[in-house]
Length: 414
Image (tube, rainbow, N blue to C red; front, side, top):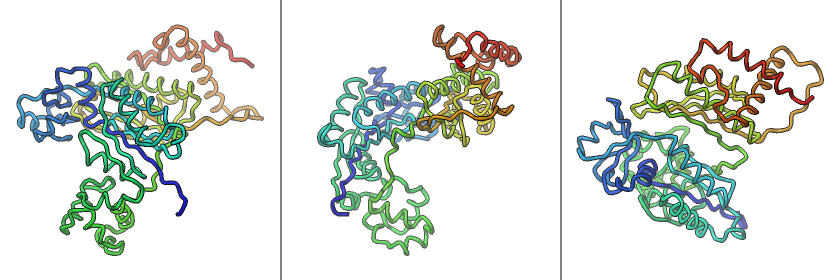
């Protein structure tokens, strides 16, 4: 529409993120082909690799045994998920200085920023991207690719074009001209089967596939025809996720890969407690709980539950039930993580009538959690723990009785 301001979307991409983080900590590995993959699993696959390994033909998801056959001199490091998540948090913290509208992956080095309308505060959008890149290079040793476009689709394609280093700006109205000569394999949002179908018709470039009408696309793609028609033209109205629906995450990496139930509970319990503590501290309301299980061979499975809570005793029960539902393999587990989409907590009006038995029990456990928070604040996070975290399931009931008695020590104000 005439007079409508074009969006300004920055896409930051630290190529080969996990490998780049490892080489920043170990500069001696920078000049060698490096692969990030589980070292002790017979069926391990490549989680990430640096540019030198990529040139040797090694790709993500490739069997580690095959990668070693391609180059017997490659260096192999085990993935350290907690380390990558921490670096991502540091990157997001720097980006929050420019906009609250940030969308990021869990630990993949990708970041979208919507800086529409911020020019009077921070200057032209390219200057913002340049300053972010300079700050990341100075503070963390990371040199990201960046692109600027009017939507996330075109911005992501632009960083793929200049990978592994560089920058690209696609101005308003230049989307179709920019995408035209590019291969359809660079378009995000298309599945492998859809790309295979398009290339089967000898349509290699976006401009060639763009000549098809929605009616023609509906023959091979049915209901997806309209979406694919818009993708080929660089149209993407999807917004960048705002800070109003923030994502909170917590994870645990086992010292030794394990599939023992007691050890898995011992790792999951503090993760649930940490996530709930963040929810209470930031006064956020949890909407949906997501669990990620990373196995020793590099495979990751995810599961989700429709609701979550800031009460860690209830959260742990929900998380363990979700864990049992998602855990489908006998392979040992290396890392587990919980995350939830959150929103600001709204004020809650007090009930007029006496609470039900279930509500009264919830209130009791809530008072226990508050008492535990006071103890942890004063004596440290490990001053008091649940039986599951101590790997002593037989003492859980005794410990719960002890926790309930803490209410008398820390009475809540009337």
